[in-house]
Length: 210
Image 1 (cartoon, one colour):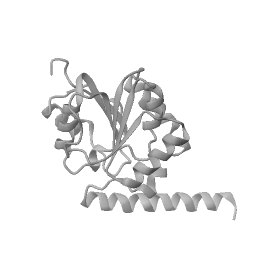
Image 2: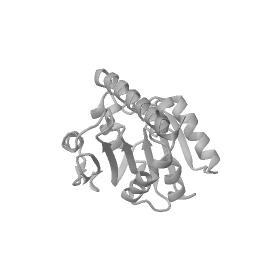
Image 3: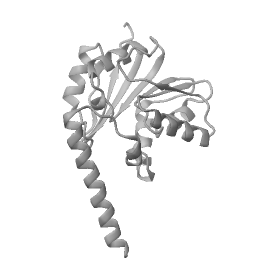
Image 4: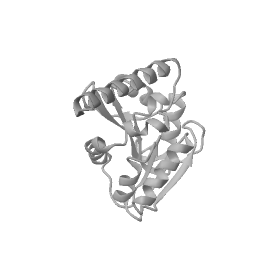
């Protein structure tokens, strides 16, 4: 078989999986299954990873929450960026995703990541513990998004911020206006979205006087 038909077949398979997942997701808030983790963690995701790291404005010693960490695509480079004096909490509801994230951290000899198996809104996060938090194409997968944002707000230190990233191709895509509205209801100060309607990131700050 030549490369052309093989690539077309692969593209068709990816599209079929995407539309099946999208259809199921419209009926119920479903996290990305672990067997589809290659869709978010692959050689083509390097550019998106660099962009997210830049938007987080990381420095040594920061504490960062990677909520819905998946296979650790961002957890590991964030842990490297904050160094040994910093720490990362990689949180996911799926044990298999956490297993893959641990394996990635071990392969990179990264030891400043704590892995937490829990869902957002369950009250498992400590108060005023994090300088940064991120939800990268995760918010729409959470059944109770208001409870999730409320818990992250409580977990952030005053002056810290949550970075929410959305891509319109994601089955659980949340618009910038809906993200800002929900966030403001929990006390966040939303910034103007970075990007466009197809893909954006929004910084949600917890006020310093909070």
